[in-house]
Length: 288
Image (cartoon, rainbow, N blue to C red; front, side, top):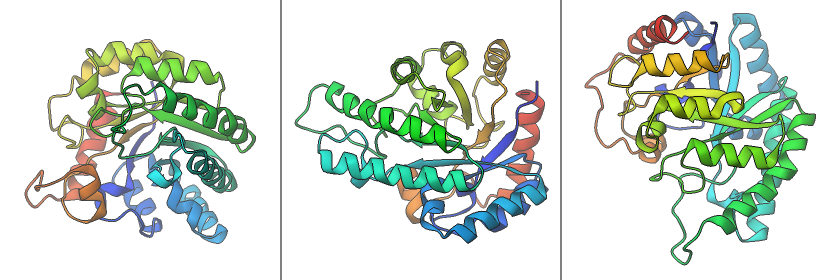
């Protein structure tokens, strides 16, 4: 079963805000079908740059997808209405920008903010969950009008608190009930939170629109102990045809290393291109 294999650009860099153009040729050369870029940063660039990225990707035959984690100042689940509404307007700006590029999927913390710490003065997350749902009820139809799908990522308890399991994500998207709001599962986060990776994928079922891949220590797929055969079997059972996007992080330093929590070289002196190419071949051989 064909599933496009991709990689997140941040694998190669220390800062989120970089020129995305060089990565298009790179990922094509290394055997990838898709490149995932930072949606919020693209929204802050001018329209000419966004169209340049779109045209370059089309020329190389590389598909594009988009990821992001909203800053706390744009928290879509905030109990402070000023912050929540600011987040809604910022998300609309992002959605419009991706719509200009032909639309596509935006995955990540599109329902709250990241990285997040549960407020000390709260005991239940339901009030913030209701704020998030209020935001998504406004954003989903807006996204649909711009040919954009928002994929709510299931994130582990140490980085977020609102949606930690696939079951919580299913309940969320069923509440929204829109084709513009689906689920993104990530094997790194699943390894922490789910009793069974295969069962979580089956539970997501028709709502699963994107998969992020990585080993339990965020090495590239094929270098660790993830149960890839179990994952593939579950993907086959739900007839998943969405993207398989590697999201490994190996190098410390910079804003990205700090945000992800890379406090040591995960691999000493890694040849990042060679490792990515080998992992792309592994994913193609074992997951599609």
